Length: 86
Image (cartoon, rainbow, N blue to C red):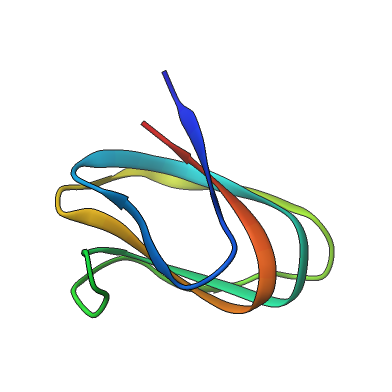
């Protein structure tokens, strides 16, 4: 069953393995999001930097993205990202 992990700043969102399906961003200011299969950043890129258009967004990824080490999120600007994970 999918869960939600809220991310508001750059850092390790989850440790261990899982799958990300998409994310919801209710509010942001010049928001960007990059996701990596890593515990410290700079490793296996899952999703290159995504720049959000103005307004709230629901982003369903074209395919599920599995990660094995952990999920590291790089947040640009400001915003609240609710990651949909399993």
